[in-house]
Amino acid sequence: MPVRVLLVDDEPLVRAGLRAVLEAQPDIEVAGEAADGAAVIPLVRQLRPDVVAMDVRMPLLDGIEATRALLRTVAEPPKILVVTTFENDEYVYEALRAGADGFLLKRARPAEIVHAVRLIAEGESLLFPASVRRLAAEYGESGGNRAARAELERARLTEREGEVLRLMARGLSNAEIAARLVVGTETVKSHVSAVLAKLGARDRTQAVITAYESGFVAPG
Amino acid sequence: MPVRVLLVDDEPLVRAGLRAVLEAQPDIEVAGEAADGAAVIPLVRQLRPDVVAMDVRMPLLDGIEATRALLRTVAEPPKILVVTTFENDEYVYEALRAGADGFLLKRARPAEIVHAVRLIAEGESLLFPASVRRLAAEYGESGGNRAARAELERARLTEREGEVLRLMARGLSNAEIAARLVVGTETVKSHVSAVLAKLGARDRTQAVITAYESGFVAPG
DNA sequence: CCGTCCCTCCCCCGTGCGGGGGAGCCCGTC
DNA sequence: GACGGGCTCCCCCGCACGGGGGAGGGACGG
Image (cartoon, rainbow over the protein chains, first blue to last red):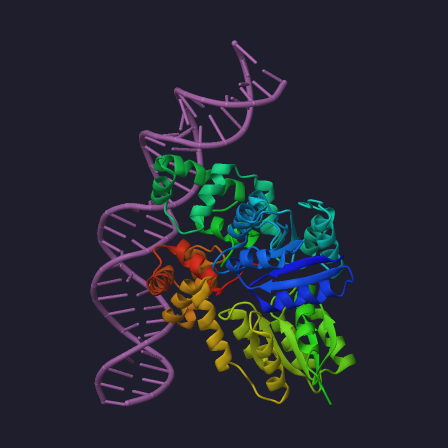
C-alpha cells in the first residue's frame, strides 16, 4: 500500500509542485490538498493520510497551531512534515516542539523531498537530516543572506535575548518591551546591548534587519 | 504550434509546480528549466522559447539582470513573465522597467497562471491585469501582511522618500544616508520624517519593519 | 501666471537610545 | 565551596533621532 500524503500550503503553485514530485513515485499517493491550516483537521479525519506535508506560514491557522490542533484532536494523527523556506525560521522550531516529525526546505531537490516523505512515513523522525545541513551550506555559497545567518549562529543569543530581539523586530521601544516582559527598562537595555554586541549591530534598526535577513523573524 | 515556455526559478519545487500546471494544457509546452539567471541566456539561444517565466530573486544573476541581459544580447528575445511572491516588490517594478512584459503572483490559481502565459505569448503586455489586483485584494482578506501593504499603498512615497527608506532598511544612519545621496543631514531628516508620517511609524525601526512586511524590501 | 508638489536646507528642543561601568541573585557545574 | 553564566537592576553621559516650524527654488499643470 502506498504512502498517502495530504498537502497543505497556501500557494497553489507549491501544492502543484509537491504533487508533481510525489505522484511521480509509485509508492506515494497524494490524498488531498488544503490551502490553510483551518481546513486540515476535517480533511485528516476524512482522508486519513499517513503524512501531512505542511507549510508553516499560512492564513487563518498557521502550521504550528494546525500541528497542535491535529495532535490534540485526532486519535491516530498522521506524521507531520513541516515544509519551509528558511532553515533558521524560529517558527519551524516551534512547530517541531509542537510535535511535528521533521522539516524540509522548499528548495530541496525532488529526490530529497521524496526521500523525506518516505522516511517520515516509516517513523523516522528527521529533525536535522544531513541533507538539510548540506543544502543550507550549499545555498549559503551561491547567494542570499548567508552572512546574516552566520552572524545569528555565531551569536548564540540567550533565551531572554531572543525574546527581546523578537519584540524589537515588532517595533517595540525599550519601555514597551519592559512592560511586556514585566521587568525594568534598565534590564531591557542590558539585553538590547547584549543583542547589539552579539549581532555586531550599531543600533536596534540594524539588529532588526539582521533578524529579518537571517530568518530569525520573517515577513508575513 | 504550442506556446513554448522556459522556467527559471531557483526552487525546484516551484519549477515542478509551474511545469505541472502548464503541461496540463494542450497548447502550452515546457521547453526547459533553469535554476538561476546566469543559465538563462544560453538556454534561450538553444531552446528559443516563446515565453520565459522567471523568478526575480535568484542566486548568481537575478531576474532583473537576466531580463536586461536577454534583451541586450538575444536577437529576437522571448516574452518575459516575472513570477514573484510579493505584489509590492520593488524589484518587480525594476524588472518591468528593465523590459519584462508582465508579472504574476506565485499564489495565483493555476487557471490564472495559464491565462497569463497565453496572454503574454499573444503579445499582450499584462502589467497590472485585473486578476492580479483582485488576487491582492482577496489575499488581503485572508491573512498575511495586508496591513503593512495597505499602509505602503496609502503612503504613496515619493521617489526620494523611497530611496531613503531603502537605505534606512539597510541600516544606514541619517548621516550615512546624507553622504550616500550627497545632500545635507537636515534634508535626510526631512525625508525620514515624511516617511515616518506616511507609514504611521514612530521611529525608523518601525518604518524598516513595515518595509520588510510589505515586501518593499525583502530578505535575501 | 499662479498654485502645488517635491527637494533642499535651516532653527530649536526634548528624549529615547546606546556605551561604560558596577552589583546582587539564582542556578548550574566543577 | 568556588566559579561562571544568565537575569535582574542601578548610575552617568553623549548623541543621534525625531517633532515642530519655516523657507527658498525648480518643475509641472491648470
